Image (cartoon, rainbow, N blue to C red):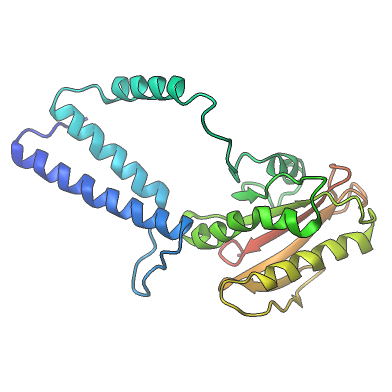
Length: 245
């Protein structure tokens, strides 16, 4: 990799790293907090900015003949030992069991293959329906803020409410309760009104983004496009308008 060969180059790298770090902070503040994006502010992808930061850090390290990867390994090893069991595991929408189970649906559905999807928090049996959805609400809100810039396609809610019958009525009840819950917690303060689209799909808007709602369940026959091999679970997929052709 090319090295910076003068103090001027090193200064330039430092200022670029500072600027990129500032953009990363702004993106995270927007995704995780209440930092509203400016109307004229361009879309910024967190993954792209992190890659740029890593690239420039390697250039800067090379300028001082530092093996950045060895240094990072040492820091991570020390931190892993020091912080072992200090922190609770937090929700990660790309490693959740809900998404892992929904992947069995994706594997047999050509329309969903290669889609970038987030999963809801693990359903807790002793909690009621609304409490379980409340647990996933911050994650879904983060999805609405980041979907367009990060190229995300959808968010899937796994519903494991044993009080609902495992049939079409139970599934529609679950979907209606989810939409009602989101309507009550819509950041833009508008009541959600769903409307039918082609087939059995419904659409609605949440936080200024249009979503297409599709349901999957095990009671459908194996040849049905909405069949799920996962028993005792309903899956409600909300695909963003950015994902639709």
